[in-house]
Structures are given as structure tokens and as C-alpha cells.
Length: 409
Image (cartoon, rainbow, N blue to C red; front, side, top):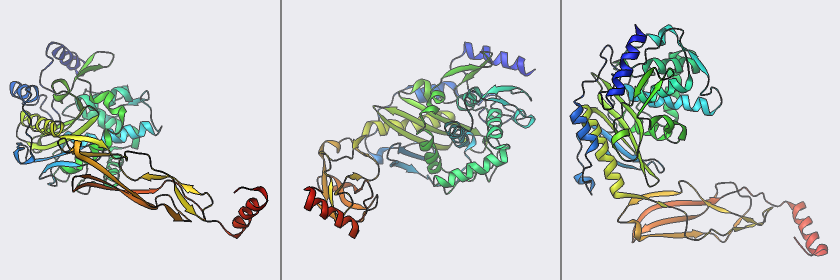
């Protein structure tokens, strides 16, 4: 029966590129109740971006907009309200899978055997059968593109042995990322669980961490694809991938209680933004809200380099085992500024001429101040790039001996 359903769904995908996505989370409904015309209008029509934050209006009850490199939050609306994230949960699931691959614990070519529990998942799925084997690559693709709950659980079991142990790792990773308002109870977001909660801000944090891994974009940018040797079709639940210029991902979510959620990422001219919207009334609302936020960012902000206009000169170290240390800028090498401010940016560098030994990596040597007129846009510490030990008496005597008899240091 599952194979028959698989074939029928594949045929439907072939003849309907913009057909509604499979149910993102809630079983036993197979299709989201999307108004396809409204969704297409929301994601296809290119609106005129607003130019000020005060003019920025979105329907999403909870949202946040931030930039990838700097992490700067540009806009937020009830961003710390705890809500059920539905399948946006899978951002963390995918992050742990990607990290397991990059650490060498698993590979994309490893075969995963489906457990009875994984095969029992409802909602969005590829209808895995108990004992069925599939590569990590195809399961990960199914999770990212089609929000497959069965594949999410199967991958969790591969990495941790059980979903419950994997969920503990999800929560540990959330704490490491500073996601202080998050509690995961499952790896898929499938269940309506009132204790499975996060916030737009926390989703922004884990989304930012995920898109640091370029590998994930091999999957998040797929519009349509297949698994099982072409026998089962996948259609991306994120309609922005097809319609919105520069879209790179990331994850949709829907249940009857969480409503329509989305973590959307897009990149243009080397700048990538993350827009998270939660608890939207309709699918069209979530795409329109996310698109509005992303377009606002692209229209009004730019990344500029933090590095000074000329190279930093080495700083002399008094009584150091080496005579000089190279200063470096601490922190991000980029700064996000409003586009109309960028042409007027200046950089003021203040660095000491000399410093006493001993010196540790990261010891402060000066400050780089980025300004626009009298307005300070950012201050960055200039620190020692290496540690330098202090000369002891034996070192001083040896150096004096070389100077006296060999004519050098």
C-alpha cells in the first residue's frame, strides 16, 4: 500500500510544480490547507520595500530579522514569546546531523535501517517501511526538502540510538548556542506538545548556526527532487526557494496549534539574512511576512569590513623573548550598517607603541572605533595575536653576550 501511495504522490508532483506541500507535521492530514493562489501571490509578487523600521508592518505575531555574519538583530516583534515551533524544530535536528557528518561520526553514504518506531511517524513523511534501508544523504534530503518526520527519527536513532537521547543532545546544543527559552521534547515537531517550546529569537540563533555549514545548502536550495531511485518525489515546503531571489532555505512548520511558522534565509551580494516568523494565521501570511523582512534588510543594510584602512604595525614588547607582537582585531571582521551611512564611515585606530612582557594572546593593545560623523557604530578591541614570554636573567645575559661579542641580538 505504501508503495502505491508513493507512486501516486510522485505522479502528482510531476504534473503540479506548485501543488500544495505534504502536511508539514500534523497527522493524519496529508495536505496543508493552503490557498495556493494566495501563497503564490505572497511569494511571487515583488513588493516595494519600506525604508524605515517604523514603516515595517508584518502580520506574523512573533518574528525576528537578523544578519548571518554579525548576528545583528535588525527587527523583532514578540521575539521572546515561547511558542510551539512545529517542524521548524528540524533546524536543530539537521544541525546535529550535519555536525555528526562533519565530525566523521557518520557519512552521507552510510545506510540507515528504519525502525518500527521511525516508520510509524505520521504527518509529512516518505512512508518508510520497517527494515527499509536508505542512505543518510537521501534521508537528510527528505527531512530538509519535504520535512519527513520518519527520516528525522531514523537519523536521530542512527546518531544517538534513540530519539530520547538525541533530544537530550538537542537541548544541550540549544544551551550551548544561548537558546535560553527553548525546550525540545521530540526531534520532528510532529506532536502538539505544550512543553515543546522555543522562540523566534532562539530559532534565529540555531538557524544562524546551521547556515554556517555550507553543506546544508546542497539540500535547502532544492526545489524538487526524488529518492528511492527516482520512485518517490519530493517538493520543497518552502515556496520562497522557487519564487524569492536569493533564497537559501530554511525550514517551514505547521500544526493546528503552532499554526504556520518559517525560518527563511536568503543571500544577495554576499550578505545573508535570517527571517523567523511564528504562529501566522495562514501559509500566505508566513511567506509574505518573511519576504517583507528579508526585502527590508536587502534594501536598507550593507556589510562593511571592520579592518583598518592600512595594515596594523607590530608592537614592540619590552623585555620580551621576541621583540615584537602582531596586533589583530578581535571579533567579527564585518559590520552591518544602514546603506545611507556606509559612504560616511571612518575608522579610528589607537594602538600602543610598546608593551611590557609577558604578554598573552588576546591581551588588549588598543581600540578600533568605527564612526559615521560623531556617531559611534562599533568599537573593537585590538589584541595581541601571540603570547610573548618575559626574558629571565639567563636570557638577558645571553642577549648581552651576543651584543658584546657577536654584534647582534
